[in-house]
Amino acid sequence: MDRKYLFLISFLYVLAVFACHGGTAAHAQSPAAGYPSKPIRMIVTFPPGGSTTIIARLIGQKLTDSWGQQVVVDNRGGGNTIIGSEAMVKAAPDGYTLLHVTSTHAINPSLLKTPYDAVRDFAPVATLVGTETLLVVNPQLPANNLQELIALAKARPGQLNYASSGSGTANHLALELFSILAGIKMQHIPHKGAGPAVTDLVGGQVQVFTNNALPLTPFVKAGRIRAIAISGENRLISLPDVPTFTEAGLPGFSVNSWQGVLAPARTPRAIIDKLSAEYARILRTPDVRDTLQKMGADTMIGSPEQFAALIKTDLTRYAKLIRDAKIRLE
Image (cartoon, rainbow, N blue to C red):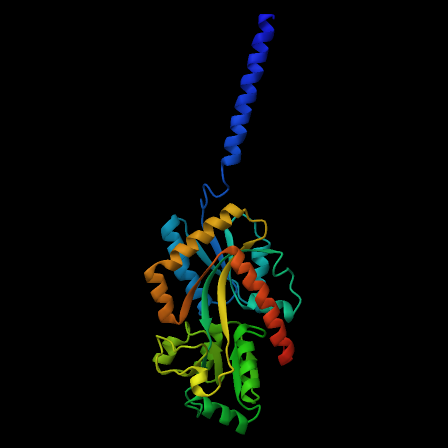
């Protein structure tokens, strides 16, 4: 065979081997290999002052310490959490814009038309915490325990008012369920987040409120609001004198909520897995676990698949509660 043809064949063979190896190397390079290489924006769907911001900052700082890239908490309150959620959906699916959500994410579809699909347009990353519901009142209200509050509300039908973090939020549904079980009627005063609601509760503009214990405990300990009862089977470590609803005489009241992290749909699975693993590691550290527990929150470690299942389950659960309670947005 002519030497020039041998040379050509050898050259083509080398090119083919190089292309093959290069392609394999490129294929093996995971999208998460260099992630994160710049700051991460964590959108929180409520104004500052509530438990979502507290937890987002706590865990965000741990992510910053671990990865050396700043996690910036971006409060996008309003629109019943839709404003922040829509901003995240429109972001690039690259892991640099995440969404810190609550159970409200699974409530909204049963109450209003959202500009996104609660399942299809999001990629679940991790569950973070589960929280029970603490019932509190303004200390000027002449009710020192649950039975006194129920008796007062029955004596003044429609005259007592209660705050929520917004129409259709988990604490709005909690107060509606409480009213149904207790056989009372109160006026609903929606707010744009737990922070503003607590401010009005302390100031006396509203009289009753429920939320997880994180943003409420300091005000209870300072005597600026009065804690009445906590949902769940056990009392809070941070507020051991506050009875459970069962202990206080209303065993049917069982309401808890969750917080978690979502990413835009089509975010590479390798990045989702890297984030999920890091959240799980952080939540298992004793200092984070103990800090959350003292605030009244339990760590809730879950895989992306488990979080996806939880959202779908709660979409059904809350739809039934909203339908049974005939709840409508004001």
